[in-house]
Image (cartoon, rainbow, N blue to C red):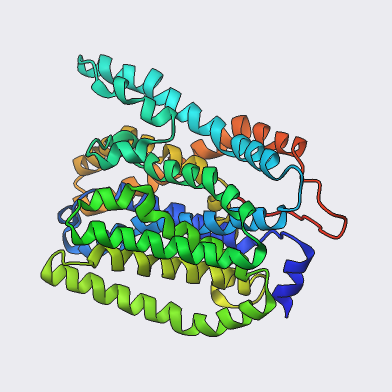
Length: 392
């Protein structure tokens, strides 16, 4: 089987996963740029709802992170530098841009906004949550800061990186799927308890233990991708799971629209979304390099470029929205354009601005730290070859 041959050779770069990351960041930006209500879109309300579900691009990011990180951990488990190299390389990939963004917000943008509006913000006293990657827990208490609200997902991923390497290291290879399934079941059960007790949706949305199943599902996919037998089994299941999860998700959303929130709605919605995202990633793994339509789309230069710069785009895209969306929409409205068209045009411009800024930060900042990752190699047995891997 072609897939198993690639796995045996070691970690491989999978271009389709770059494209899926590109889809994820474009979906998230569409969600944030489109505003808070379909009313603004008038007769184009259907366009709004398409963007609304783009918020689930975060789920795709989670499954991707679980897959990619677990792939690395499984293939480097025998290395004496298993922990040291992993954390050093993660720090170089994540910390510089993240802390730059936090510093720019609290020490450049926030003072400017305070000067502009003549009032001192209370946000200064809350910045410790951002510096410590605990902002998702700050948000669950109802203290969401709109300007930095999207950082909750980065906090969850960092918490995942903190505990998952030890969990994988303590497990034998055969027990890794049990670890992943156990994490999925436990996280889903905890989410269901919160759901049935009527917890706020934002609490369930941002609490680490209620979202860990999505990351663990990616970890399970990583283990499956190393075993020829389970890849064959998964390919058979994929034909059923992918369409079934989509149909059930649509039915669950329809029931919610008709009945309002009902017991178990949030749990079912998140679990089915995780399965859909997992199906996309599995498709990318199983069909890498082939001529199927979805594989060709995810290998496109446009999506792969968006995926390459997605980290910076995710961190800074709300800056473009804050600084550019309202002036653009107001200017276009002044020329008599309908509000819906003005918003869509503003979304495109904000997307281009975000991409341009991400391109700048990559070349002027990020790539210089990424070059340092070569100083932290994994010393692996001679029969284990590590090629390039797409990382989050």
